[in-house]
Length: 206
Length: 332
Image (cartoon, rainbow over all chains, first blue to last red; front, top):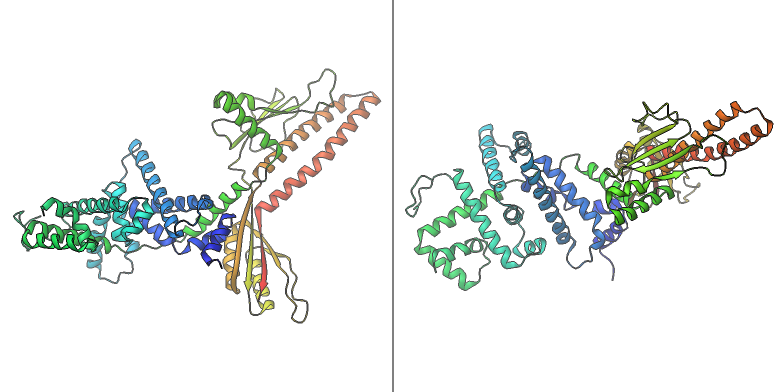
């Protein structure tokens, strides 16, 4: 049977061919970087974390046997590497100064430079996005991971279960809890405009 | 269905992954329970906010940085081993296994000495190579006894104060003295080989490189042979990008070799030989008997003979690590 282009690239990467590995990961680079960015909440850490993740994937590519798709295998390595880095950084932060994990102003300007909105809408959108990112950062790492994979990157439950090496049931309950936690956080940040709809006796101002 | 069990199913309800029966039960509950319906609306809103977060672009330095680190990783996996450094590592590993890290340092010292030639009443120069445990394997300490200090050493922070005694300690950081030899091979498809070759030559020149080997088509329609470019290491990535513009890249192989160990070993041996050489010259100046002079000169000749290939090897490594080679195969 003829080998697919991906299989050839995997074989070559296993022999230490950097160019083949670069080609192999080229279609996942942006996804991985964005995953790292949403997990860490800032560009600098995202770059470091994503680089670490790819380096780990390269050094362990000989372990890839084709039991799952390459994309799933890569994302599993990447998500583990990201979580390890996050935990490491959290420990460092605890022992050093309390650095904010918030997105910096400059980062946001980069992100919305081409949104085409007027300055006011841009500012408002920027504020909202910053608040959403901040809310995501307030979740535990495991919750953060499922919310990002499902609601930002759009993976299916099955894919997430394969990537995180969890049972489907665990993914479901974890995602459910993560979404509720995120929702509560967003409400507490007054990010939802007050609703006129029936509020079930909880009051109108929320 | 009770509110808390509905709550557990809301996320799935939104994703449409509940089975028909469950979805029906949740739907019914939502019709009757405004609190849960409200919860659902908030959840929906929150998910929409997440989905509205745009994708960010890779920073421009992401790929070059990653490539540099990948090449380092590859180089580490296939280092050019040196006998001396390997011996040092093995000793260290054995010692630390037996007695723990702290004791390993003591067992580590490796002494280079010429036993074949001695001088009555004078200490023979000795070189002791060891590694600092705290920074191992990135640091080598070199101690030279009984000879002369190697003159050229800028990297030696320990020299002052030791001058009176004929002992020198030289620290070499493996990391700072890292020598990587990068090589690339590109299969390039070009409509007109001649034109592509000219274009590549121009680009190489702009980047301070040159064509080392070129075997253009032999007259009418013969296959052109490979072209080897040599250019400064820093220009490696830039040149690869430029080559891609001269045609269609069919295949590309990038590689790197770590020759740091071999380099450090050659340096260590060279220092030792130079120390030995000075010592002999000094003795020669004090000798008056013909047989003594003869013996010293004979020994000196041997040392100088050994110095030459070592300095050649260092020069080769320096050249190879500060430049990189790209081989281009023109294909049709």
